[in-house]
Length: 329
Image 1: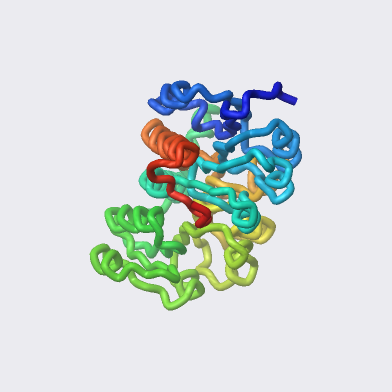
Image 2: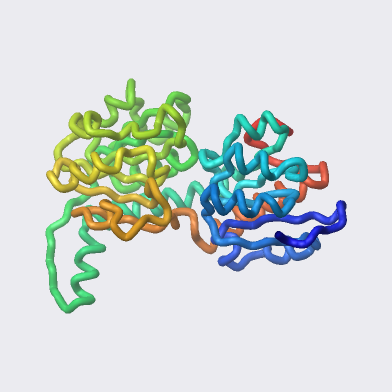
């Protein structure tokens, strides 16, 4: 248990590693606040968050840590605000935060460019066998595999939010045909960038050579790429997942990689992070996994960090913009 502090002294829990590891102006601004700052290396599971919650924090500046109802209950009555570094809120019990009147802040509009670039890094890595052949060359093997062009191929984008739109722009620059699905459709954007609207997600999956996932994790999207959906896709389809690992059924993707139904799976996210050494995707053929670094660049991290920090400063002071995600402010 940490020592008690004067009532007016702010104690903040900082868990996001990207924030802590990357240089930028957010460090000086944080130091200038004079807060009692407790640093942890997230993402943290519920058990560790429960241990920490007993230390009377005024705020969490968090990443993808498990902020469950139990964690929130144990953090009361002192916890005033949660500031999320990033945009994914699926690890936070939002209904409970509303019930307890705890604002949840987030950082929209700061990482869509770099995630879109990472999406194409994974796509090119798979279609050109870059990862496999580079690793072989390091071992002294001149492995000359034959790859594929993406010119003229159809990319199906599930989720045309900020990231999905940036992926569409880059796909058009590569000469790809683009079909997309999103319940909220931006007609002006689609017309400007020649994006065909799919009548349903299923239509997109059937028509695409490449499927790129850019939707939030919610009850309706959890496990939405499963055995039956995969069976409807084109043979040799490439699937890119820079959204959430839980959007796909891992066992079904693994089986389809081994059978060749899926020609390649590139993901920056897994259903368990960090994964156990025996996670089946790590040893599956034609599979490239990166350790959730899609938004971790020297350009993007300071943007996210400054937005999450200024959100927090403004919320604690009661002034300025806060980018509230749960409607409490």
